[in-house]
Length: 334
Ligand code: ADP
Image (cartoon, rainbow, N blue to C red; front, top):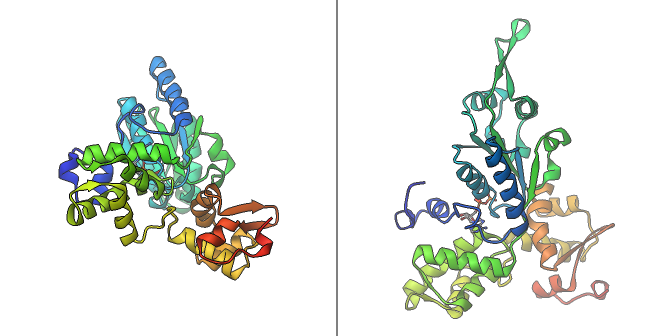
């Protein structure tokens, strides 16, 4: 994390880390969450207490990890990072919790994918700052309560509704991250270009932003691919024309739809005649989990006006048929 952007360049994950905003002020977009969180943190600082536990929800790549890092930085607190799937046994969580220092921020990514026993241990830790460590096995096993120092849990999930009620209720604040609008993405691309020393024209930034699926992580990734193209095939400057050619070469959809988005639309139109069809049926048709289709693909498809949710199921809009290059059936023209 101490790598400079120049040193990190070439390694995708290191570049991603280097491009992360470090303070709430540096964060672009997400106005509502930024204001809400800034208040939570300021109040905690005034009281000289660890802030309430924070739940962040939203599709991947919108800034949940970044916000967890910012929370720790703004509180001048250390940060520990883990994820729901990494905590397979309650004992894994007990080890993490009992190793926390006062005021530390614990970030649990994909917190909805934690095991049941770990989840129950977490309730107690969040509420009473206590963990029961079980020693031994079978009838001789004993639970030894261990007091924990006050800490702040930051959980991330694609949708708050995926968490069991008791866990959700123990977060003092939930921030809902929304897909970014093109103007904010444009600012993000320009900021990243500045850090990466890329010469970027405004129309080039707009082209990249428009194909980024409302997602800063994608915007940053596309910027680096376009930069490669500009360097090898042009004079290094990213113009709209350069961006278009580069992104066409990499088969990036002109409106930003990714493989799963397109698969969902394709199934919806070609296999189910444009719907209405249930989300579970649609998920089976594209070979994905329902959760992934619902939390990752659908928000962008709805936002872009390709898919509508109706009481009877998901329906393709005329724009969806057109985007796939198919004739719009009369049934879709409502
Ligand atoms: P998540 O944890 O939600 O999957 P991350 O926090 O890892 O997303 O963000 C992915 C990338 O997008 C990071 O490299 C970060 O630099 C960038 N990013 C996210 N949100 C913003 C923002 N609001 N402004 C600028 N860059 C952002």
